[in-house]
Amino acid sequence: MSEQKTVRITLVKSLIGTIAAHRACARGLGLRHREHTVEVLDTPENRGMINKISYLLKVEK
Image 1 (cartoon, rainbow, N blue to C red):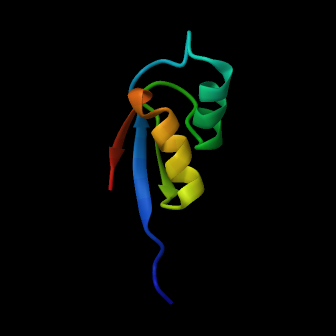
Image 2 (image 1 turned 90 degrees about the vertical axis):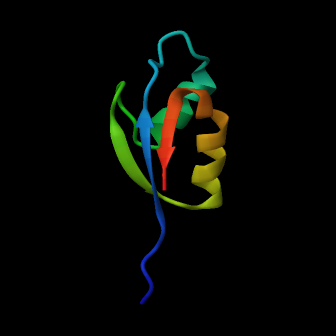
């Protein structure tokens, strides 16, 4: 069985002052607070959320 690809994302900017839809994307990706890092599957759904809030994130493959 092949291993699924993941992406490591870190929230580098605060969610304070962002619009509600962007905060919802961060929560949907599992990011809770600034400097929090999570690994998520590299799916089109997650990529869409990452692209939407890319100005708040640092993305590593």
